[in-house]
Image (cartoon, rainbow, N blue to C red; front, top):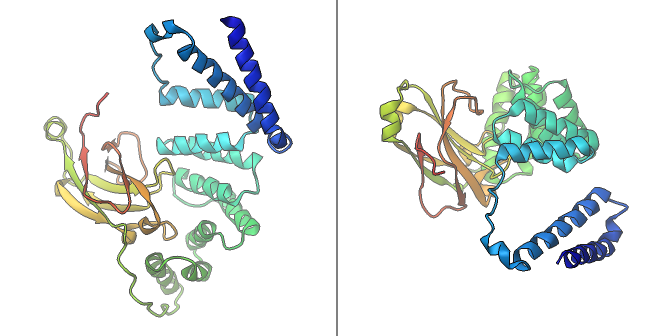
Length: 336
């Protein structure tokens, strides 16, 4: 059977090389990856369907996230010029709350893809999240400004530039930066953004913008019920004023919420409605999304960004608009 396996793999590689030849000049790494992937897939398929004894073989368990991250790091060490790999590493680390490592990974991605405005903004946001003072430093600001030079009017870059100006004590500049966004975003987002602009204008001693027509209610408003597991509550003593965050975020995306509310542990159980008014980022709204991941988090520090020792509910992924209530339980043991 070995000659057949070798022949099948070789034939597959030849065919794939012919198909992918036009991509060779543009992305050799992509071609090599595709060839290797198909070769491995061919071998795996034959191993299962071509060998009767495979029925009795024990399937190896899937690698853990830490193992997968180690493999990805090893591949990037061998082939560092893979911006998509660094970007994937950065997003994964961010989802695990490893913000400093995430920022470093995005910085590596930018080295190899320095003119991609979306990547530049992601790198700037990662650096912002990792900063102890939650401020955009000179490097993050440089990335934002370069993103705007490459793509003028980039919405997230414009929003971050305004944040940097506010942090630098330049509220008038921040208001001027943000105002063009009002004509680019949906009415619900514009209503939230207008609040931020008027706050900046007030700090600058400027009059507020004229009121716009009331924004329609978010079509993707999400009802979330949060409770504390009774067994967990009986074993662990927590202060009643311990912070509880209820968060909706992009599945597999950055840790920054698209909607969030802050409550106290003593308020549980409670039911809340997350909508566009709960968004900390005016350029990213529930009303614009088709799916979110919802979690509840017990935070001893009171910081909305995940910290070591925080307790989270099992995440629930739901399509929008949601047809029912999302139920979250804090402290409940997750099935293995």
